[in-house]
Amino acid sequence: MTNHPPSTFKNMLIIATFELRKFLFNTRGIIALIAFALIWGVLLIYPIQGASAMLLQPNIKDLIDSLFGVNTLNVLFEWPVAEMAVFWCFALYLFPMFSILIAADQFSSDKTRGTLRFLSIRTSRDSLLFGRFLGQILIQGLLILLTIIATIALALSRDSDLILQALSSGALVGLNLIIVILPFTAVMTLLSLYARTARQAMVLATILWTLVSLTILLLSNQSSVLAELQWLLPGAQLSDMLNTNGLNSLAFAPIPVLQTMAALLLGRIYMQRSSL
Amino acid sequence: MSLIQCEGLSKSYGSKKALNNVSFSLEAGAPIALVGPNGAGKTTLFSLLCGYLSPSAGTVTLLGEAPNSPKLLGKIAALPQDAVLDPNLTIASQLAFFARLQGMNSQVAAKEALRVLTLVDLADVAAQKPPSLSHGMSKRVAIAQALIGSPQLVLLDEPTAGLDPANAKKVRELVKALSPTTTFMISSHNLDELEKLCDQVLYLDKGELSQSVSMRASTDSDYLTLTMQSCDSEKLQQEVAKLSGVVNISSKQTNVFIIQLDNEDKCEGENTLTSYDVEVALLSLFNAHKWQYKMLLKGRTLEETLFS
Image 1 (cartoon, each protein chain N blue to C red):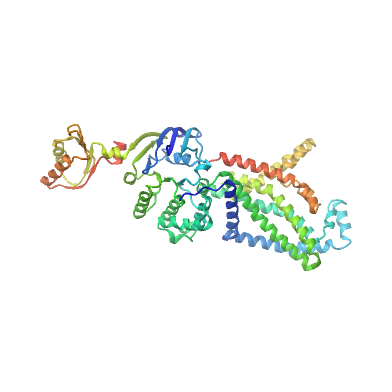
Image 2 (tube, rainbow over the protein chains, first blue to last red):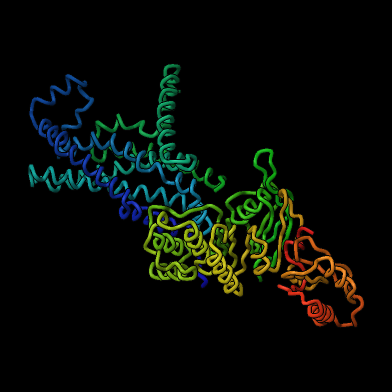
């Protein structure tokens, strides 16, 4: 039975969709999905609904200005849908954390038990690397989509006339969040290639973020030029993005995109040279 | 074009040389055996051939291509030692996924997964997950994945280790049945098994290729291996040594005798394959002494060939 092996690109798509199916149709994935739904359910019903009700009160802007400064969170009040504004504040920090958790086992377990050997004899290492990365983005994209739909539903339950603003705002938030999680997922791709277990990959991620943040902090005290090194670390732009909305948030997109390309390039070099 | 060509192949782990300057060339055809003691470098050689490892020195080509070449994808397959499938997914879904990566569409891939599982008599476990299988069944599933898409070359690292005799026999029969279309390279410690399956035997020792033996040449050589049920060993050796055409008889195991023949006395065009003078004389001798023989083998066993 002779078959022409598909291209790296086609196999990358096959691997990515298999990763998504693996997540959706196995017990561990379903448990993760339920846990995720519960966390976001609680967040949406209590903090997000409560905070968005507060945002709609006329005096709250003065209070926040006096607490955090005049131009720190002022854009939050410009969002057309208050629920989406509060969701944005939570999601901007929570999804990168989810990303580290969810994407920690892209390669480590498979490498340790030798499963990768069954794959590498059938497909290129590039298709494996980029396919699994893309698969993780699909999984997280699905989770982002589900939470945005839930937030839109929450806003519509308050005021059904907000449908158009909620949809357009939700689409931009979704796009921005996917761009935000790209470098976190790519760094986990790299770390899971090196680590022997998902837990080890997460420990390495914690060490990496803590050590690099501290180093950059120390260096930035020495010189303002060295302070620019902060842009090497995924998530450096998050605090600046918090006080933006809509298309303005996309202005920060080049930073995570470049970080993703760098992490994947390192991952590719490591993958090509490593023993399986 | 050679099926496998290695030139000065070496692999070191730190200061330890797992493989040292190994060179050989193998053609497609009957199964090839890779033999050697533990730590001889067999798995390292397999890993280099599969592209799991990169050599420290030397070159290796399969079907004229370097391992990991996109041109080889789907043409070679392997049963890697100790590699296991994902414990969270069903066997059928994983095998179908492998088939899809080899270029089959979803329907064909699902059928192919079932076909290869049927080859190893495990179609009934297709919907199960790997942890529910015994060690032997897991091994057979791993053999099944190596047969997806009928590759040209299949590398089997210890395929029958841990299998019960009945299933080991089934695997041997499977290899034999598929040999006309697929070349197998098999690493094993079971010399009897390799003797039954393989023509070409590579013997690795301490990372070096110490022997390359053709079993056919061994069969054609001027030896007979005689296994007796019961006999007076000394008397038998004395009597056999007197027979015309016998150069020497020796015994390293109880009731097993290696008889060296003299081919020079035979007429032109006559050899051990066409002349049975010694065999006939041996049977007459057994008859005269009422000795029961168990087996008379032309040539020497692989064990005898490698270690004598």
